[in-house]
Amino acid sequence: MKFMISGAGGFVGKALCAELLRRGQSVSAAVRSGNSLIENVQVIIIGAIDGETNWADALCDVDVVIHLAARVHVMRENTTDPLAEFLHVNLHGTLNLARQAASSGVKRFVYVSSIKVNGEQTSATRSFTELDEPSPHDFYSISKWQAEQALWCIAQETGLEIVVVRPPLVYGPGVKGNFAQMLAVIAKRIPLPLASVDNRRSLIYVENLVDALISCATHPAAVGQTYLVSDGEDISTPDLLRQLGDAMECPAHILPFPPSWLRMLGKLSCKSDQVERLLGSFQVDSGKIRRDLNWVPPYTLRQGLQATAELHRRVGKKS
Image (cartoon, rainbow, N blue to C red; front, side, top):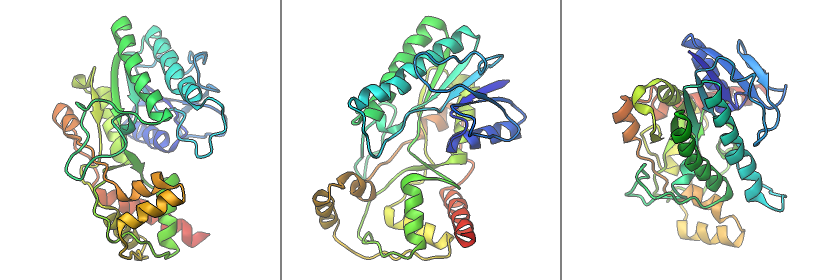
C-alpha cells in the first residue's frame, strides 16, 4: 500500500512518515518547499496549497491520502479578510486535493480536522463527542468544518472513502507553540499561580495520533466516519505542570491563586483566551474509535509527557 502525506514536513507529518516506514509501507511526502527533508521518503514539492495546486506527481500510484497540511492559527493576523485566507487553504485546497485524489484512483482520504469544530470548551463533567452539534468559533475551525462538509459531498459524487479525525492539542518531543512555552517556563523555575485550578483537559501524544491515523487509513470500518481522538486520560493544568516538571527533573513551582482573579487579569490584559486555556476544561470522548476500530493508544499519557519533557531537558542542557 502506498500513502501520500500532505504536510509531511510538519510535527505530526514527520512522525507519521517515520512510523509508516517502520511498518514497511511506501510513502510519498508532499511538502510546500525544499526546506523539508524527510529521511528515506520520496519528497515532492507542491508549493502553495490552494484550489489550483497540482498534486499529480504526489498522487502517482497512491492508495491512501492522509491530509495534514493546513493554515493554522496566526498569532498576529495582518490580512484584511482572515476567513478568506483560511478558506483558501483549508477548504479550497483540501477539496482540490480530494478531487484530484479521486481522479487518480486513490481509495481512501483521511482528513485531519480539529476538535475546535466541536467548540471552545466543555464543562468539568461533560466531554465532546461525535454526536455534538458543531460549534466552530474562529476562522480556523470554521474553515475546517466547511472542509469536512464538502468532503462528504465529494465522497457521494466520486466514491472516495472519507474519514475525518478531530484531534485536540498534540504534544510530543519537539512540540512547539504553547506547549513548548510551558516547558520553557517550568525549566526557568518561574512561579505559576495555578495550584487552585480544578479542570480537566484532553491531549493526544503525537505517536498515539499517528497510530490512530494509520488505523483510520486501513480499517474497513472507518469509512464514512468522523472520529475524536485523545490519550484517554484527562489531566488538570496543575497535574500537567507537575508531571512535566518531574520528567525534566525541575519541579514546577505552582502557587495557589483564585481562578476568578486570573480571569479578571486576563480580561484586563486582553489575554482571556490564553488564560482560559489554562483554567477551563476541554474533554474529548474517544470511545467511538476505540469501539469501531478496536483502537487503543499505544502510549500512556505519562509515557508521552515523559518523552516530551526528556527531549526538552536534553536540548536545554546542550544550549
